[in-house]
Image (cartoon, rainbow, N blue to C red; front, top):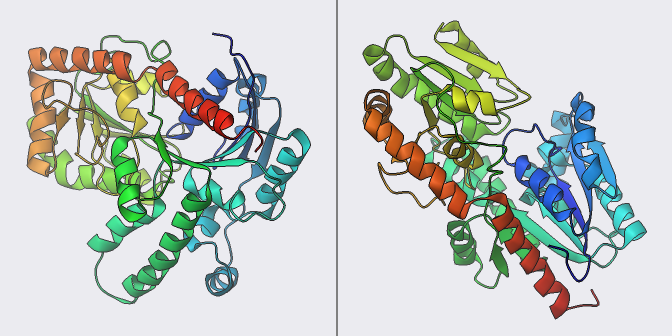
Amino acid sequence: MQKDFTMKILFTCKEFPHAKVIGGPIIIYNRLKYFSKNHLVSLAAFFRAGEEKHIPSVKPFCHDLKLVPLPPKRSPLKATWDFFTSPIPHYFLRTHGSQKMADAIAEMVQKDRYDFVIGEYSVMGQFIHNNPLLPPVRRIISVHECYYLARLKAFRSSSLGLGKLKEAINLKGLKKYEFDMYRHADKVLTLTHQDKKKLLEIFPELDIAVVPHGVDVEDFSFSGPEGEERSVVFVGNYLHHPNVDATLYFYQEIWPRIKSQVPEIKFYVVGQGPPPEIQSLSQDDAVIVTGRVDDVRPYLKKGRVFICPVRLGGGFRGKILEAMAVGTPVVSTSLGAEGVPTVQRENIIVADNPEEFTQGILDLMNDDKLFERIRNRARKLVEEKYAWEKGVEIMEGVLEKMMKKNPSS
């Protein structure tokens, strides 16, 4: 539907959100795609070598597109210097510390006078928070995962030692900086009401709106299983440590139990950047580690079961919704399924220990009625609550209210 006025929006992202990206950045790709129908949108994003080939999938949506190479890994000396001198947390600087990105965002806003600049992911908030070059503009931070809360969970489960002491110091600085960013933003967005509640428990004055994740239900069409009858699939970005932990936990604690019951089973490990400990799993002939793939849908449809054995981190796992959309039943930890309105053994199986996780997978392997019930009801859930248009319309409404409340920003 054509709008009465056009908004000018600059999205910023920690990865290049192209059509074939795996993981959270697909959210930004779809936001660009849908907002470009009625509004002027631009993108500033980090990218990796080889991703230039995906520019044609994004450029048609963008008034302006600026890609900045991911910065190289800091030297130990530089990391130590930053630790003692920079107000920006170690967690942000080690992967995305970049004056080039700060300059690029400021130049884009100066040139086109955007109504909004949106930091997609908290790490991008550093470029719109206390950026002395950035002209006046409405600043929004879209929190896909609160870094402080995610690291706090890992900290509490870690063993005592000098590393834990250093982590405690890092966490204190991270909490202060991250919540200062949120506090000074004109609006904070979260993907779930649970995430909003957690942030408000720490800082009740934050101005937060919930903009849910979504799935393109036409691209992720419902179908029957297209691969081996006996296989499980996990999809994740392995540059994100919780996905490494989840895969190793599954392989070490759950996989042997399943293999003893279903000797012919296969395990597909899909996603970019698998570290050596994940790549080594392919020494098991029944484990296929794909690395980066151009299209995740064939792998989602390949499995009899999609697994999400996530134990660390925060935020929302969109891959669960994509698996549900194509008709692959999901077995997940409660953390992995956080934010999804789950009904146990109706649209998902939630299991938080190896025994229950194993049993959930075996039940879906062996019980066709359960398999069909879960896959059909999960698809219905996605169609009713998580079609992409719904989330984007909510976000559009949030921005329009901000424009009307303060037209001169």
